[in-house]
Length: 337
Image (cartoon, rainbow, N blue to C red; front, side, top):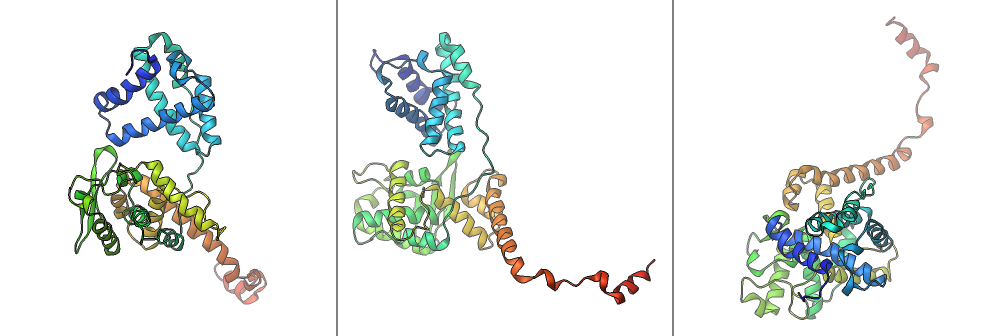
């Protein structure tokens, strides 16, 4: 980094390249999530006409961070996402106050900003028919269409996180009679998940059309048009593009469709198919069954709503007899006095 860079810029570099990976031992995906939070902060500064080239640690304060959080929410971020961004900035401030002790008071004030309480989390997912419609929309007869269908099919079929898909290598795929893929997940942990035969056929077709990728086991399976690693934002753009295309003819289709919705959809569809919640936990790579239980609760809520809607049509109020007027029944009950 140039010598005339600000202490803010140097602090970010040290935080991402030294502190998180080496002192805290965080994996690449975790470091990437912290990087995203700080990128969003820089984007906020630019949009609000701060001179990022001269922005320093003394300019980072509680008022600015609160404005940043409100900006995130106004731009569509949920409370949960804003809370995650805040948590990342708090960790950055805890690191920075060791280096910029003259700013320790302002940095401490940022660390005590309270997260906004998140109401009961609502699972966003697509129905089976909506998912089929979305996945089958790309034209597989052209290279981009085939790549886009592969991306969306893998997101759903494997239930992978979007970063796990970005990191998937040719050597992580086993085709054949029992096709599986190996995913590199949170906490630097790996898991192997089965994929459908149709998914395996699609991967095989994609590799046949891209023999250069197939040659080396360490090659990324999916790259962008420049043959570079796909970004999470890039995959999000692809997903939303096809969702928007569907909405042009179907206004009932969800307005905002994001890659993680494929994972939610897979979990909900597995539950509806009667698959054990413990298997779903392992399939998704959750450390705790409590994380997976959000899908079971959402599924139960849907079933209760369906039952409540159905009940008035099954039993009318006037079908229940008035037992107080039934003299035979009254006489029978009096025997037990």
